[in-house]
View 1 (cartoon, helix red, strand yellow):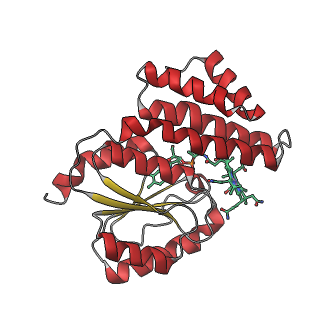
View 2: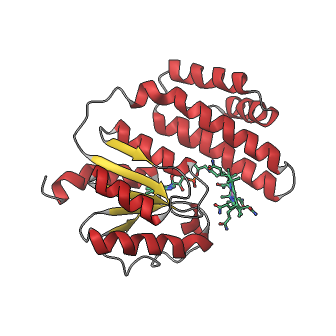
View 3: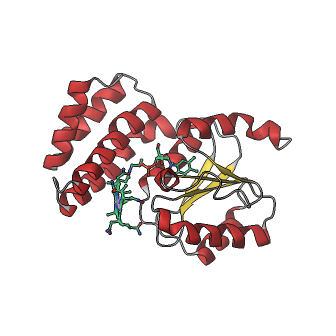
Length: 217
Ligand code: B12
């Protein structure tokens, strides 16, 4: 749905820091009724992954990568009319990145997909200390907790968070995902009860479809 020339044009505007040019492309795609996932995955995620590779290859500076990230986070708000027009189901989810995990865009996408499916979401963003996460769960009483991990060496932080949550809420379903799992063994979280490692937004959508029935609601 996003042609290659349009993607290339977007990427070059993003790298220049031309946010109004990028916003016009998003506006046009929204007018063409692009769906949220295509916008997020084929434009935002693809460009950020490409910029990540360029940063590793020393083709762009850290400053340029930060600029592109900040612009992307701003552009995601353009999708709000798509996301917040849905009927609500009464289900609640808390979404967070664990302590020391500063990559928050994947988690924000997860929150937006849940919201699109009628959930009320509480997205806490990057590097959430376990005590803060616990307090938010206590307050919002979610039906689901989603945790995002990009840096594989943050796995201990993730496991600590899961263990603390489990002590108090043994049955709360926890979905986990993120780039870190490209580098970790797929069995890394197997010991934790009721924790699902999901590979993509597609898997998340599939889990949401079965969520109500599986939990008898
Ligand atoms: C932007 C960025 C940053 C920004 C993040 C700012 C922000 N506001 O988020 C900042 C500057 C903080 C940063 C810092 C670092 N970064 Co960085 N960063 C990136 C970059 C370029 C883009 C990240 C991004 O937003 N991607 C787009 C999102 C949409 O993708 P995603 O997170 O993978 O999410 C998708 C899926 O994984 C999934 N998903 C994610 N979470 C969840 C959760 C659930 C439940 C589900 C179902 C799905 C799901 O859904 C999303 C849609 O498909 C990546 C490149 C890349 N390939 O990702 C590097 C990258 C992640 N960073 C990397 C590194 C090394 C670092 C630093 C260590 C660099 C340094 N030396 O300081 C630090 C670590 C900071 C920390 N402790 O967290 C490496 C990680 C490599 C690795 N082996 O782990 C990458 C891959 C770059 C690279 N090519 O090497 N970074």
